[in-house]
Length: 254
Image (cartoon, rainbow, N blue to C red; front, side, top):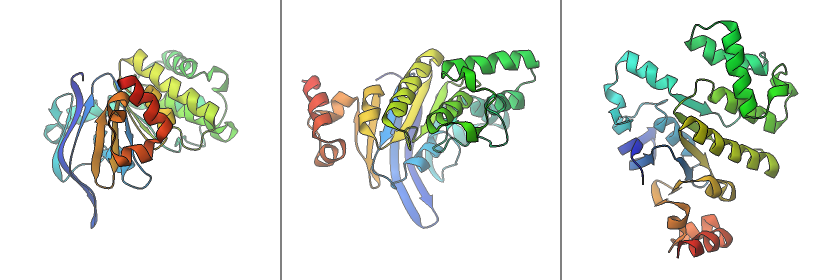
């Protein structure tokens, strides 16, 4: 595995009296696509918010690019947020703004640039997600797949070295889901980024994953490349991924 981009060590994630993960440690390799999978409702989204430093942790440590996030000053904290792009599960586009204005918003907020430069950047992002003809449309005029791609364009508006995607394929038909999966890989390569996805849809995730972390209940069941996790899999891994996926990747591991 390549060097760590994100390292979560001995961390307890708890909301009120509910312990979601206790003493969990996760290593996210740099410049790779990491997929975190597991059944619905086990806390994958909570874990993603921790890994992206959106929520603080009460116990344990989070290192991003070898820096402990507990020790960051206000300027370093702001710089870190500029380095993170986040694709929300339900896109979270602002309904009163056009696609163009949604993508321009983070650029305007963080940088004082002439409008012609902002327009050039937005056009580049829309071209990257194949939405060049939709810049003047509003979110209610977009299909589900278009809205997700517009949200992805906004997530990469600042060319972040970290991209986090919360259930990027949720609610998408198979064609749109495959298109979004391919886009994430392409953008990860173009930005030389570290991407972290959470999903329960193994048939979409494994083909694009460099590294997989499989969760169940409060623990990590297995981690590694798709080939590694399918080679001599546990009973849960077999059940979750299904026999066809296990056969395909397990066979290629031998």
